[in-house]
Amino acid sequence: MNKAIWPLLLLVLGFAAGAAKPPKQSNELVALGKRSYNIWCVACHGETGAGDGSAAQKLDPRPRSFAKEKFKQGSRVDQIFNTIATGVPGSAMTNFRNIPEQERWGLAYYVLKLKAKGK
Picture 1 (cartoon, rainbow, N blue to C red):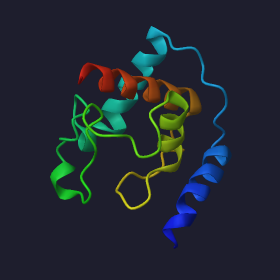
Picture 2: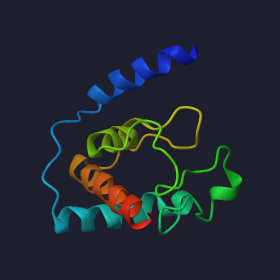
Picture 3: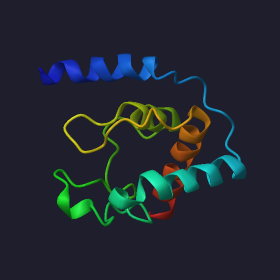
C-alpha cells in the first residue's frame, strides 16, 4: 500500500475505533491502565516503558521507549488511545480493540505517566 495513504487510513480507523472525548484522568483509571499494561504491553515495551520487554529483541522494528522516542501517531491521550485501538503499521504493534474502551483510556493515561517518569 502507498505510504501516503497510511495517515488517512489511520485517521479513518481512529474514528471507527470510537474515540470520543477523553474521560477525566483519575487514580482509578490510571490503575486500570497499569493493570492492562502489565497484561498486554509489558512483554514488548518493558516494565518502565523503555522498549526493553522480554520480546523486544525479537521484534523489528523494536518497540519504542516512551520516554526517549517520539510517538509516531501523536502523544496526546486521545492520539495514544487511537494508536492502541488501531495499531502501528509496519510494526508488531497490533490493534487492541479487544480491550474495553474505558480500559484503553486508562492504558493511554498510564503510557503518558511512563513517558513522564522516564524524563
